[in-house]
Image (cartoon, rainbow, N blue to C red; front, side, top):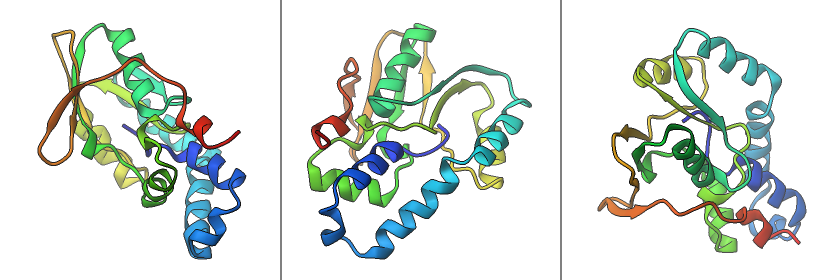
Length: 175
């Protein structure tokens, strides 16, 4: 995975829910906004594109509405194979976690534009190259020759199957 879960959804929530300014210090929003400015920049996209050209990518899907969970379901529909994903390995920013907890929403089902799910053979090499270029990425799982879509939750590796995509969580917060 390239990017972080829920970034664009949290950006929308921050812009629409001004009461958050009373709950968190100014630096909290400055930190996120500075990060998001770089995260959503054309330079970042260009750098990702430049790095990816050296790899044989089997599948690449940009995340959008419904977040990372919806994108994983799209992956399944493209490859027709199962997979196992470790939820704790999915990159997520602390601001996303805190605001999601405040509104009791699932950050992994929040819009994640600018994040990508990829399927490729040499994922570790790509991860290292992206990280060396200051682009967050992580190996979040592996594809298997079976139909089940497994998500491992929490430190005890509770096993759940991936649900069909649902409405983006930001719609629970923004009218």
